[in-house]
Image 1 (cartoon, rainbow over the protein chains, first blue to last red):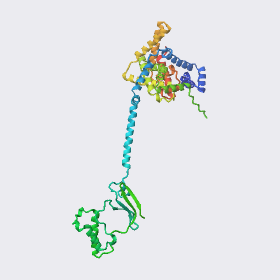
Image 2 (image 1 turned 90 degrees about the vertical axis):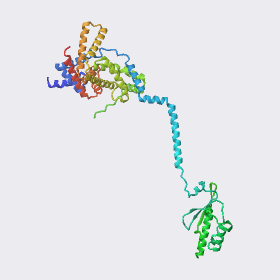
Image 3 (image 1 turned 180 degrees about the vertical axis):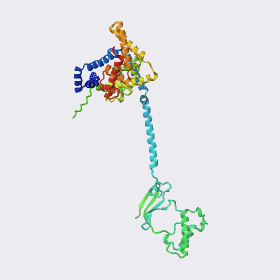
Length: 254
Length: 199
C-alpha cells in the first residue's frame, strides 16, 4: 500500500458518508479511479452499511407500538398535575377570594396599627413651662395670671402672678412702704387679726403664709436698721396671659 | 477575509421552535404531535441501541418524559430532532450501564427482534421458507455484531447508517467533537467487518 493509499484510506469513511468537500473530495475520487484496492475498501464500507440497513434498518418497517403518545401525554399531564407549581396554581385559583379578602383585612389591620404607632410617637408633649402648655394643661385653673418678664436685659421668663383662686386674706402692703415699720406692723396685725385668734400655720393659704413671712422679714430688717429693701428686683413686664377656661388670653404691655 | 455566513432560520427550525413553545405552555395537542412526529425515530434508535423491543418501548417513554421535563432548556442551538437523539443516546447509555451491573443476557431479546422481523418479511413478500430462515440467521448475526460493539461506536454507526445523520449532527447528538465521530465510525465499521466477515 502506497503512501497515497494510506492517506486516502484515512479519509475513506468520510468519503463513503458524503462528508468530503472540495479538494479533498477531488483527490480521493481521482485516486479511487486508479486504485482498485482503495475502491474495494470503499465497497466494503458501503456493504457494511447496507447490511445494517437490510438487517435492522428502515427497510423492515415495524409498526409502532400503539398508545405511546397517549401514554406519554397522560404521564406528563399527571406529573404536571402533581407538581408543586400546579398545586400552588390550583390553590391560588380555588382560594382566590379568600386570599384577596385575607390580604385586605391584614393590610387594613397593619395600616391601623401603623397609624396608632405614629399617633403615639408623633405627639410631642408640650413643655410644662411653655405658654401653649398653660392653655392645654387642665391643671391651670381659669383665672390664673402669667406674665412674661425680664430683669434688666435678661432672658424673658414666664412667671405666674396669680393662681386664679379668689384672693383670701388681706391685700399686700404697698411695696413703697416696705421700710415703714409702723405700716408693716399694722399690716401684720390686720393679716393675723386679733379677732382671728392664733391661726394654724399649716392651714393658712400659701399666699397669705408667704405674705406673713415677708412681713416678719421686713419688720426684722427695719428694726436692724437695714433700709432700701426692695421685695423684688425691678423687672420689665412684656406680656400678660390670663387663663380663661382652656384658652390663654394675651395682652402686650410694652 | 473569510465571509461570515448568515444565520438562516429555516422553516423547519421555526416550526420546531413553535412546537416547543406550545408544549412548554402545556398544550396537550402540541405534546401529542411532538410524540407522534418523533416516536418512530426514538423507538427505532432505542431498539437499535438496546436490541430489546420491550426495553426500547420503555426507554421511548422515558425519553419523551425527559423531553417534556427539559423542554424549557431547549434553546434551538441544534434541531429538535438532534436534541431528542441526544436524549435517547444518553438514556440508552444509562440503561446499558444498569444492565451491565446486573449482567443481563442480550441473546434472547435480539433473537426475538430477528424472528419478528423475519416473520413480518415473510408475511409481506411471501418469500420461501428457506430464504426466510437464511435471512433470519443473517439478521441475528448482524444484531449480535452490532451489540458486540462498544456503546459509543454502536451509537455512532446506527446514527450514521440507519438514521442517516451527518457528522455534525452525530457530534451534537453524542456531545463529542467531529474528529471523535470519524474515529468512532471507522472503528465501528472495522469491528462489524471483522464480526460479520463474508456472509
